[in-house]
Length: 140
Image (cartoon, rainbow, N blue to C red; front, side, top):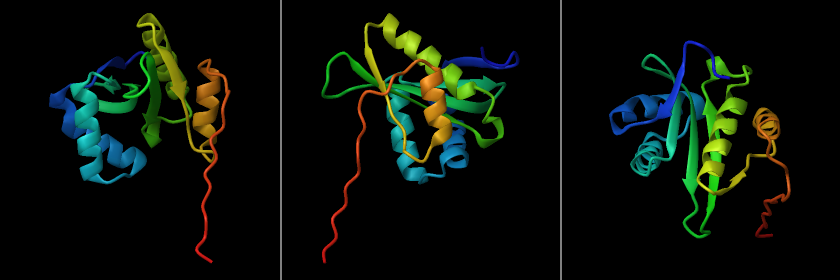
């Protein structure tokens, strides 16, 4: 369950500045990239937020695959101030239920070093079935 003083809803175009500021604080990415990425997610109704008033505390996305029909990738980001409160797990559970209601097969992934996300993914009910390795070649 989400905290009592919050509500979960689609992020709307009018929320774009709040979403970008949230993303910069939470993942520290480049403003231009976040603007394009969040604009596309909002237009496709694939970005959801956990709000307390006008404060975005966490975001979840359910992105339909462009190459695999019936498959969607889910993910979440939680503001540093609200981490370690099971919010990521709850967002993933909501996205999982929404995706299943739509008849989608959902996948979720994270970096090997992101132990918190790995725990949330497992606690939300996802099972690990594939591992992707990154391989780099040197020029020498």
